[in-house]
Length: 112
Image 1 (cartoon, rainbow, N blue to C red):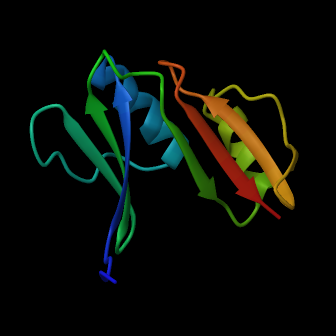
Image 2: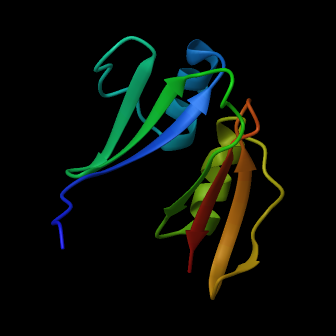
């Protein structure tokens, strides 16, 4: 079995500038790297990153699940930075918060 050492969640977007603004607010940090044209990365841990990739044909068809330690605090923070959501709901033995980015990609925040 291969040993995997890194995870990159890749999200297709139609406008990189809009996506960089939105994901920087969502992830509470600026872009960490732009390894190539059309690609931006936020390094959330040593071996875990979220990427946006400019690809208007695939934009809006991605789902990413991120676990957070305090979902209520995260909902309050999202409210303060203008990211709309419908509130937490039960899901998968935890609570989840479903959010849509400007292209309609789904970001699910899961927490206790």
